[in-house]
Length: 121
Image (cartoon, rainbow, N blue to C red; front, side, top):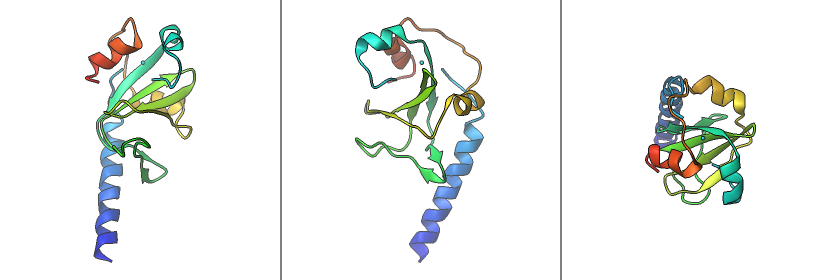
């Protein structure tokens, strides 16, 4: 019973911290061919804290990472990239969600890979 309460408290704290940090920004992933990446304009921002969606902490399907995401908004879809480089589409997030949590665009990059390097991935 104490374990469930502790987990619920940690989840609640992570959600509150995520909501507080989501008001800040940074700057374009795509599970598509490299050719398509070069043709698509998009926006990227780091999300260092756990990402809480529908009151659940999101974890990477490939490695289980749950923080230090790169959130990418391309073609009206939101993609997530974990620190290990796994990319996944997140259907529960949309361009409006991204727009509410991102700030002004501070830099532009020539390629997707340049943007990732700039953000430390």
